[in-house]
Structures are given as structure tokens and as C-alpha cells.
Amino acid sequence: MAPPPQKLLLAAIIAAVIVNVTIGREDIVHSSCVHASYPSLCVRTLSTYSGPTITNRRELAQAAVKISISHAQTAAKKLAVVRDTVEKKKREKAAVVDCVEMIGDSVDELSRTLGVLKHLHGVSGGSAKEFKWQMSNAQTWASAALTDDYTCLDGFQEIDGEIKTEVKQWMTKVARVTSNALYMINQLDETRGKPHVVRS
Image 1 (cartoon, rainbow, N blue to C red):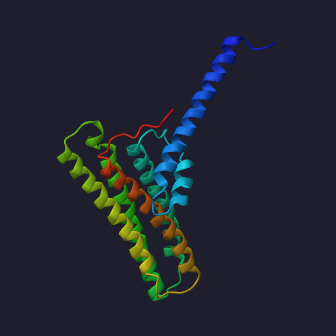
Image 2 (image 1 turned 30 degrees about the horizontal axis):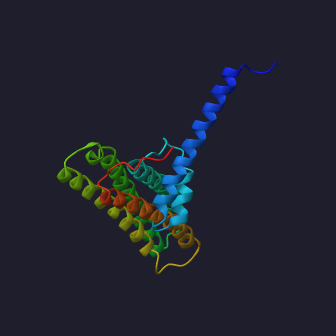
Image 3 (image 1 turned 90 degrees about the vertical axis):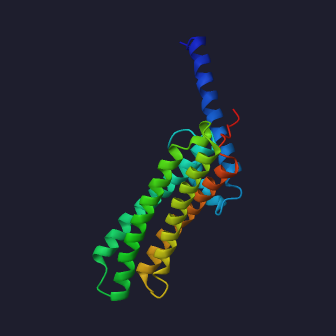
């Protein structure tokens, strides 16, 4: 038995909504990632973001920071394992211990960044002064996180071997997604946090 026309109509409407949401997310992601530090990585990570639907630039910046936090947390777990198993080579051990501390700081700073973005008053009509203060805080925390990522990498400059290769791979990815997140935050500052609503 064929389904009633009402059910077919409902199914068609739902399908259309899903397509529009997907196209809308891709539209804002692609247009926003064009001038990011790492455009291809930016599009790839944000297009596959599994969180709430992205409809404006503030939500996009929050998604970018959440992605950075996720990558940093993953790297932190891997580094902790390396720290606990690495041989007692003084320089190598010290570099790993320092890196664990740096990535921990980075996660904390990115979390603070996300907290600021979630309460960004410029988007909902706050004063320009308050918006600039909030943006300054978000940019400062994200920049500090990026600095910690690179400081970790710097600690391995004089070290060779498999551990350096692994750490460099993990931390380079974290630094790149964090750099993209910082770019998205800076974009908010340029538009004074006004929502860039996705076309439906």
C-alpha cells in the first residue's frame, strides 16, 4: 500500500530542511575559511563538526575553539602516556614533561576563550566598550594557547628520534586548528560580533 500523501509531503519537507541546513553550514564554513591560516584544514574540521547547527560567525568561532580543545585534549592524553613511558634521557624527558604542562595550559586557555565567546554581548546588543573588552579577552586567551603549542614544539628542536616525530605531528595539528580558531575570533572583532546569518 502506498503511503498517504500527507506522509509523503512531510517527508519531502523534512528532507528539504536537512538539505538547506547542510548547504547553509557549508556556505558559512567555506566563505569563512577562505583566508584562514590553514584553509583546507579549516573547511575539513568545521564541515564535519558534529555539534549544534552553525548559523552565524559567533557559533562558527565557538565550533572552531571546541575543535581546538578536542585536539588539544587528545594530544594531552598521548603526551601523558609518552611522559610515563619515555626512557630516562634527561633532555628528552624534560621536553616531554614541559610539553605536557604546556598543552594543559593550552586546554585551560582555550576553555576560557570558549567561555568568553558563549557570553559575547556584542552579538545581542551590548555596548561597544563591553564587546571590545570581551573580544580582547578571547583573543588574549586563544593567542596564549597558540603560544603554548609552539613552545612545546620548540622544546624538541635539539632532539631527534621517534618521540620527536610523534610529538611534532600531534602538536602541529593542535597549533594549526588553534590558529584557525584565533582567525575566526578575529573575524568576529572585524564585524563587531554581528551574526552572519546563513542563507536558507
